[in-house]
Length: 495
Image 1 (tube, rainbow, N blue to C red):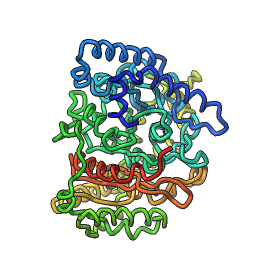
Image 2 (image 1 turned 180 degrees about the vertical axis):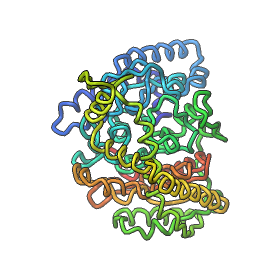
Image 3 (image 1 turned 90 degrees about the horizontal axis):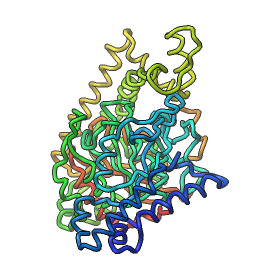
Image 4 (image 1 turned 135 degrees about the vertical axis):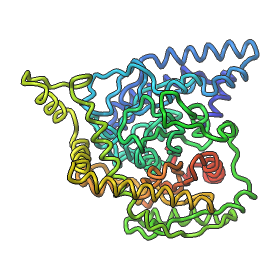
């Protein structure tokens, strides 16, 4: 069921919040003992059932006194359990970023997105697996082991928000929060056959989210339907006192009653397809076929589609990794074994404590990115490489801004390939990095993008297509996706 269907049943008393939570816990416990465990959740929170019981009590009282509508207007997500990525703070709960270096750390406060979801009545169900410090594209770089794909457990779920996405795709949670720096919500959404939104930078506060690349990081939303994404976005979006980079979302009120685009609106729509992505050598035939079918659907709706030449996009992934890894090296310097988390103290001194703690606490992929980031920021290179990366980013922002003066939407694949088998790329960092080939330009330009389940590969794995909008264009891309979902219903990717 989607969110609106679930709420109707909660209002009528046909189901209870407690039953929803208990079902998720039962599924989680049973899955742990299976031959190929999904490994989406790392733990279920011990107070989830009591919070659900409290929500049921509120609903029961409101049903008796006739104030149900008023209650759900105040708390639009009341009683709905959700999954949370292991790098988003929930007060009093463990937060490890799937890393040994944060072993035993307990968050002292709620992230803003969590506090806003709690205020809307939603219930934090548990924390989910991820690539260590959100650095990866397959959720294989985790001290807890990989998360498997619910469609076929021999395959990766995508990353770095693979646990959150797999939990939704496997019906262990109604919706989930993830984070992304270069595609870590959209990529697993594509691999698992669900919707994944990367909002405009700043629309969702980063307060309480462990930083990877601060100028690129963004909380994202994963759900089964566009209207579910919209409902969660409406409850969490907006400027935050604690995050100076946060911003209000125009037209956010229309998210609560998301209407699909009309035939007239489709006929007036202009869509751009970047030539660079069509000609990419890494694009698999399966993805090419699904993309062609998606393009045809828009044409049948009356939209005008043009292929545009944007040579700067060829430099997007290089620019992204220069910037992201430089910022990661800076952000992760705080994990030193002195203030919190894992510590290796051999009594030799602070330098030795620092080196040995980080050497033992970080995994190989995190170390690789810290080393590359520090190399880029070294005195010999920082005036050249980092500056060039920022120059490319500025140009991408300008060119995308100009593009959206003439076009309503950018259409492109989410990933060059469908999900790959576990272990296939884990020892080949460059090949893994190229999974982000079609996603990083969105983060660099700070614009919103939604991965939409659009088809299935020859091996039966989901394939996602991106609907990319102008800055603060979330409502338009979600309304477009709502029209798509009305005719395709997940494109057969549902578990």
